[in-house]
Structure formats: structure tokens, C-alpha cells
Length: 505
Image 1 (cartoon, rainbow, N blue to C red):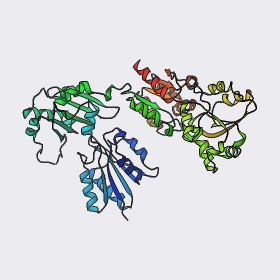
Image 2: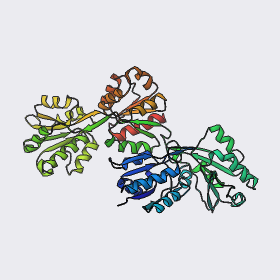
Image 3: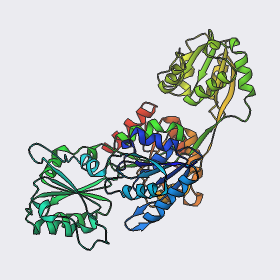
Image 4: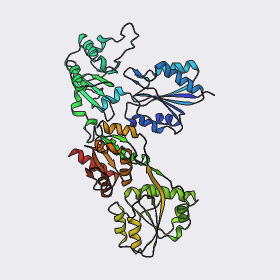
């Protein structure tokens, strides 16, 4: 049987602007064919086994021609595969989606269309320019700034556009900006009419240049603005001065490397992105289960013998409960056992399994757990400590000195991750990174291992380093990094707050 094709509008660049239907289409796909303007972060929704095909078109440099894309979609569908065609913006707003659908119809391939947020409305909105306003504009006109070169004559009615009195939005027109402004003025539009160009709208790389029809070409050339851009012409552009918001965020324009394991990075990436930063995800570590679960399984089998269960990380909580369930047990097996958690995130994850933490230290590190137990009868008590095999020894050592019988069990390992290593080195070489964040000692050591030893000092020079706490900071300093800030509260939220204060200062 033939497969089918989803024609999906990927939105204007901000991955959060894709629709839920669009996400579901990517999740269901055997093949994802994506464009230059579609955020590559959307590929994270694809299944591991999905085939990813880049079909980008960048300023006339086409990875695949439109005819080749049409044939590719048909061929993959005729193989019986489900195809998600990810197109920047909306596929039917100057996206040539109609041509792709015509090819599918001719081949008898089933298709579905998932509309997307077009850059024609999103880029102005992120620039603080409302396309309509009761006092300024009651109409909006979308115009291609780059007509089919095969046309014998332009089909754009410049006289009508110049006299509309509403807002004009040109897509793909930055190269033709002198022609566009010239034709509007020639046909009677006032040279003093406000105009703006928005480049890479809705992304952390967004740039906005304003002016009038008389000055916008000169202003754009001075700013060095290149494609992709949206051009807005009309009185509504004057509202940007008081309505701009996206570019005013505290971390806007900052490029920050996140070194956490990918599965854990989402909270930090979300927080920093909301503050305006462009997050570069280069995980320095991966979380993997131990080669042998027998020690943890034996501990779970005799859970009733323990008095305390101590968790030092979210990973430890997840690994413990995954193994508990694998042994056909549930939270009832904990019985009378008391629990301690380092940090609110660990305590929250424990609570998600239905268990409250009896101890949450004020400071989120191992030493604080030790301090918390000083006022609790621990001598002679049995403590189960499932955590990373590479964790610091201070916690079990100090609890043992206090008289506890501690079973420290490796519930997981943190190992080095080297995905996108070359891209990381390239970004550091180009000096386009503003800050690197470390959330544990293992992220420090493994991040350093990603860098060529002979180039280490060159690559990290003039690079701000942020550490989640003093232990991580100490490891970073001993590893040769110059630490610029340490979070006052040793949490992801605390680290993000400290980063904001650093750049504001």
C-alpha cells in the first residue's frame, strides 16, 4: 500500500510556534523532509528510526530543486512510508506548497495539510509591529518580493499597492528592496511612509531596521542586513518604538552553551530561551544505566531492612523507581523508610512517584545532607544511597563516620558525550559564544575532553563561565577555566537568575 504525505507548516523559526498537529505529524513520520527555514529543533520530535532529509533552499543555493523535492515526496510515499514535509512558515503562503500537492495528486498519493504560522504575521509581531490598528491600518496585503523569474511581466499592481492606505508585507524581498521602494514612490506613496525590515524574525538572531521609504535602503545597507527578511511598509511601523518586546529581553542576542545531558536540558533551555538567549545544546555527558543491575536489585529485594533512602539527583530517583517497577514492586515497598533529597528538583521528582522527602537541605549539595543528619539519630541505621557511580565520596564517608551503615549503589553512570563536537569547536573558534554553563563536575571534565588539548586556552579565552555551585566552580577552576559566576542558589532557576544578573551588570 502507498504511504501518505503531511505538508506541515513549521512556523517562522521559533520552534514553539509549530502547531500541535504539526508535532504529531513529525512524530508519526517515517521520513522528515525539512527546509532551511524550518527550525532543526523540530527534528527532536522525530522518531529515532526516522529518515531525515535536508531539502533547504538558501538564497538561490538549493540543496534540492523544487522538481526534485516533488519527486522525492512521491517516491518515499510510494515506498509505503509516511512523510512529513516540514516547510518554514505556512506552506501555502509563498511556500510553493501548492506545487508539491499538485505532484502528489498526479501520482495518486494521499496527503494532509497542516497550516503553519506564517512569518508574514509572526516576524512583525515579534518586532512589535501590529499589522492592523484601528488608528493606522484596516487592511493588510501580502506580496512576494521575488516573483517567478520566468514571468514575462510583473503581475504586481504597484499603483493599487501605493494607494491602499493599509499595511504592505513583502516576503523574500531584501535583494529587491531598492526596486520595491522605488516602485511604491513612483506610484504615489509618500516617501515619509514608515518602513521596517525584520531578519530571522522570532529567533534569537532577530534583527530589525526601521526607516522610511526614502531612507530604508540606506539604513539596511548600513546595518548589513541580508536575507531572510520580511519587509513591512505602513504607518503601523511607527508603533514599534513603544511596542517592541522580543528584542528587549535581558539575554537577547546572547549565545549560551548548555552542557547538561540532553534529556535533562529542557528546563534550562526553556528558561534561558524565555529570557532571550540562543541556547546551543552541546551535551558533555550522557546518562546510562549500569552494566549490571544486580546490586540495586538485591537492595530493592531487601528494602524493608533500610531506615533511610537518600537521593542526590533526579537521575537517581528515576533509575531507582524504574528498577523498583521492573522488580514488580511499587511505592508500597518503601513502607516505613524515610527519605532525603538534595535540592527541590530532586524532591519534586520523588514526589511525582508519590513520596514526600523527609529532609530537603537548605543548601543543595552533599555537605548539606550531612549537616541535616547531625540532629537526627543515624547511628546504627541502614542507609540506601542509589546514585551516580562517579559521585563524590563525601556523603557516604561522612554518614559512615556518624555511625550509619551505608550501602552506596551505582544506579547510573555519567559518560562523555561527543555529539556535535566539531560544531562546538567551530563556534568557539569563531568566538560567537558568549557563555558556557556547567551544572556538575562531570559536565566540566567531559566538556574539557571535547576540546583539543593544544587549543584549549585559545578556545576558552574571553569566554564567560557559569557554574551552578561552588563544587562545580572548583572543578572548573582546577580544570583551567576562569569562572565568572556561581549561582547563589544551586538550582537551574538560581543559575539562570545569576546569568541574567551577570549580563545586566
